[in-house]
Image (cartoon, rainbow, N blue to C red; front, top):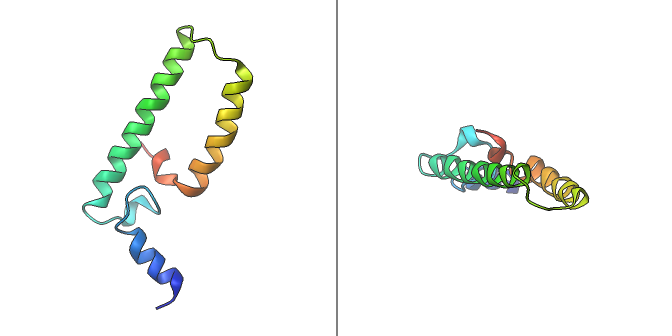
Length: 81
């Protein structure tokens, strides 16, 4: 068994990491719950900003520039609704 095959078999049981469609019956709902929590947090921050939260635009831009590549590269299942 190579290390990549072992990693793929382990990722099947770990929530959030890896392909959401190949998850075990326990890891899939946990991944969906984590995605829901992240989406709720994003919406709460966005609504606060829209409703007048005073945050400099450069801070928000740098936050998005830092977080987006991490989500897309390491945790793509968090981007799924």
